[in-house]
Length: 185
Image 1: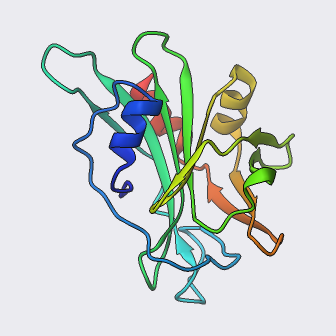
Image 2: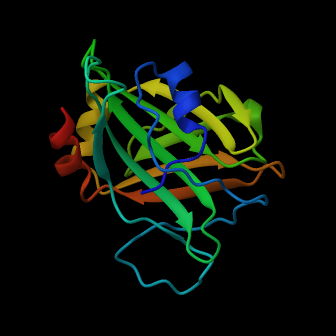
């Protein structure tokens, strides 16, 4: 999985303690089409996002700093490599509570924000907090019921509106979320 350049800098402001030595990928300009991210499904369109699955990573800013761990999933357009959505869920070393950082593409209808939904459950509103040249960012604490839904669910849907007020939903499989999360808790 690749994480956006500058995410470590932004995360250090929004999520203190997230280690910066992570790989980076900057998205290219242009609106992302309504697409699907499913690693097991055949890729009929080369402009469809691919999603290799949830991965766990742990890092520390120094030997004396606490270990910060996170699970992460991205949806990337296979043809261009453009990042469409990144979801990073980390467990804060001090509170041991999960927090999600979501990166969305540019060209959003900002007042509407975004939504996270597991399967057909209740959507959770995301308030977009900031945008920069690589995308727009939102974070939220993950409540115990949302974590349980992520662990047992089949699909996480990230939805937002483009500037034309069209809703775009990016599905992200949850098949390996529980195993990846178990590695970091």
